[in-house]
Amino acid sequence: MEGNSTPNSEDVFAGLEATRVPLKIYQDEAIYRRELENIFYGSTWNYVGLDCEIPDAGDYRRNFVGEREIIIFRKEDGLISAVEDRCAHRGAQLCQSLFGNTGNSVMCPYHQLTFDLDGNLLGMPYRRGIKGKGGLNEDFDMSAHALNRLKVEVVNGVIFASFDLNMIPFADYLGEKMMHYFTHVFDGKKLRVVGYQRQIIDCNWKLQMENLKDPYHAGILHLFLINFGFFRLDQKSACYIDDTKGHSVLMTERGSEEGEEDTGGVKVADPDFQLTDHTLVEPRKEFPDDVTLAIQTLFPSVIIQAQTNTLATRHVIPKGFGSHELVWTFFGFEDDDDGMVEARLRQANLMGAGGNVTLDDAEALEFSQRGLEGSPEDAAAVLEIGGKGAESNDHLVTESLIRGVYMRYRNLMGYEVVS
Amino acid sequence: MTTMTLEDNAVLDPVMRDRVEQLQLRYIHAIDDGPLDDWPSCFTEKCLYLIQARDNADRGQELGVMRFITRAMLRDRATATQHAAVFAPRTIRHLLGRSLIDIIENGEIRARTNVAIYQTSPDGDTMLLVAAQYRDIIVEDGADLKFREKRVVYDTFRLPDSIVYPL
Picture (tube, chains in turn brown, orange):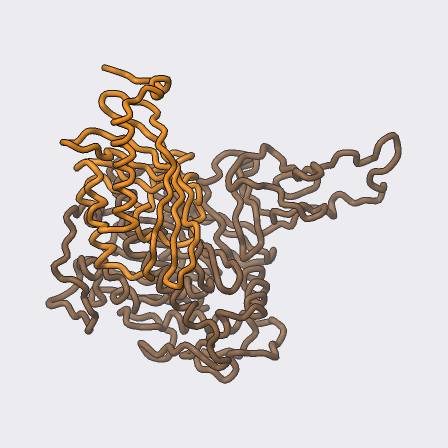
């Protein structure tokens, strides 16, 4: 299914090895439009929400796939459907609130066309006109004017949608290895939302995804983690990549470092700086293994974060080539006790729009966008750390996951393929 | 137990009102003009400082952009921001409305104050960072009034930028 895009006469990757990524792909309108069509509106599964966000019949949530606005509904039969948030009549937005309940149908506020929660057109005012005058002709086919539907799959409480109605099952899309890590966090236990954070970050959406495929930065940029000894690149760690090279996971185990810390020449800002209140970072055991950090990126647009007890999905919503919205959905489990709820809330100080750790990321990503905009036509990022390939590693000093995702990207975009 | 209702607000001791507003001003100037190390001193030892998106507040979700429950945690944040964070330099400017004193009960003053917070980039561009409301519980602590609880509920829940400094 992949790689069948029309040949692209303007292949910015032509002749480039996997270690080079042209800076043009972060700042070109035509390339961005092609990404929306070939990736977001093509044969991919896109994160759109959690099952527990719309528990009751008639509940809905608005969200985005690429730049297209969609609504997910909980139907009477308990199943979830997804449609584009665009009336089949003249294109008006149907729902305005982010969350709500719409009963067993949804009505366009403009001309009151009514649709069922599968998107079928049920009716409209004055369909037969007034006193035989006006209205729709007899031959108007109601069934041909449904809302644009998306294919939906709910996987252990997480909802994915695709514009490709023939999309392969989610488990096949992820592959066995990535499903293993996905179900490490989403093991089927009932989820509970802890809260949301939303922020605009002025950089290309791909830079956000790359950042979580770049474990090399974590032990360098994040002074908070380094200063307090929470993260060391010499901890027992690994990064895994799937066969399609689009998905990946990186993980570390706490307390597994051996001997003197190998700081690899990283400048530690202030060795005397200590936390006075350590409860900020006290972990509670919650998964059977010793993994304390597992961050999975699912191509194209969701990051699943399990850092000690802060569990969150980070949904990347592109907003033009130079900006994106990052929506953090912090979650826990329905059976969390008060102590676990408190631990999640407290550790959330490290994450999100003002997190001690993640605000570094948002800032560095904006530095990247500002730096690369206006670069010469042939400028390219150099990705040679950890070799030239895109394999899994038992360390984090590597850019192999980034090289990997661009192999997948080149394929989907109809550019020259490398492996 | 002495309870002062909203009607009594009109006769609120002007000295007390002035002290409440002085506390608010001390708080914002510690952030806007520094030193940031003065910011935690506006709080009682055990306290709640919560920067909360309005949509979370409306649903009763306690998640915060910052959520601290001791003054020590506030101090840690101030230190971390100054010594263990990477961000572009910026200037913050708070514009406060007057405080509406909702109720005084058991020595606690509950007040709501509207605030607009502007941020200026290193290139000199100013933008509205958030429109927000302080929902405070203020108490006597020694010779001073302090925040025992400060909820910063921000309406701008699709934040236009990262939150580096307290709001």
